[in-house]
Image 1 (tube, rainbow, N blue to C red):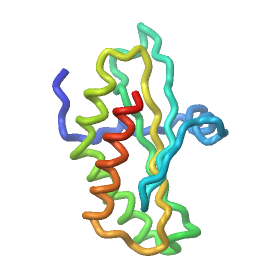
Image 2 (cartoon, rainbow, N blue to C red):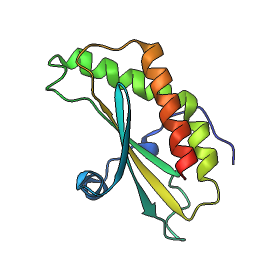
Image 3 (cartoon, rainbow, N blue to C red):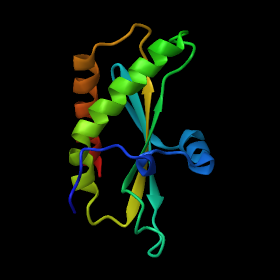
Image 4 (tube, rainbow, N blue to C red):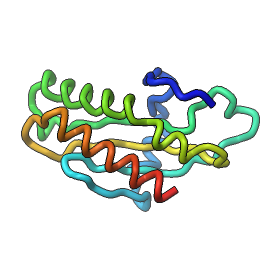
Length: 133
């Protein structure tokens, strides 16, 4: 499977049902400051999984932490870019699995983080998550 450095619409987590299950509780999570990750395994049906990616991602930046939409969008953009460049680590760990993965990145900091900080955090998260699988 050839993994491209893209982050297309099909890789985004937008199912209300899955998002509610993800945040309902009882799912695994850990923190690598300034990000927290919540993830859950999703069973894949044999017929419908042909076009679905192995990992679906949601990025959340609370309005309580960043009041300005400009700042929230900047943090989301930094996390999205860092994930896009490093998703190979997680996708290689998901090869041959009979389930998919729903992942939510949640920003925890009050100050606008630098790209280097976000990039290092996302790399640690993806490597730890691939080890857990």
